[in-house]
Length: 114
Length: 115
Image (cartoon, rainbow over all chains, first blue to last red; front, side, top):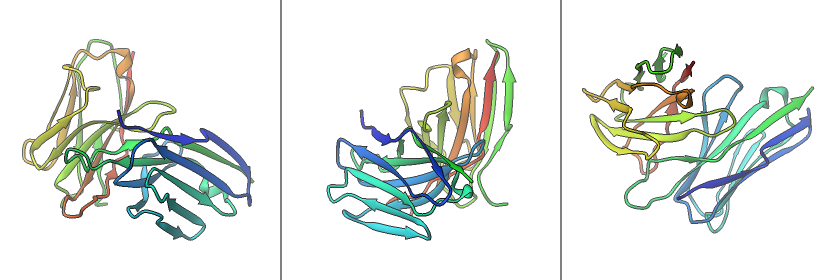
């Protein structure tokens, strides 16, 4: 079935260091969405990427969608303790009209040492 | 608060008992989803409603699971004869289908523990 692979599973950084998580699909995605889940919390929508090669920024967060629409990345510059949580990518494939069923990666748990 | 709400937030039950969870979506959202999340995993799709119609059910949803959205507003997810493997966080999300790719907003989840 359709799935997204996300790496790394865990990342521990010192506050101020950068962080990147990568997401990969074996087949072309319609779009990819990124969510953040704080410990004990629920997934919170961050952003959606639709176009090939798209790059979007939210303050210290930079999101990229690959040219082939098979991979994506989230980069955080100068991490802060408030960035702690699990970052999930979630892919959508527009096959058979199922343009709604998100398939989540396993997530990358980010911990930040102050 | 106009976000997605779920009730209860926590449920502890004994194996073999039935449980029912409720989800209230964002009021103008016509799409509603149920996901299940276990420790260390991302949410897994269970089922999807557009208005009151249940349009898709995952293979993960055994016959012991049933979901309803009778009036196209709130939804319930019932698990009959619970098993220890049902222990998980059950997440509800809602969205509006008016856009090409809708954004799903998640509720706080119901954490189920089956003893």
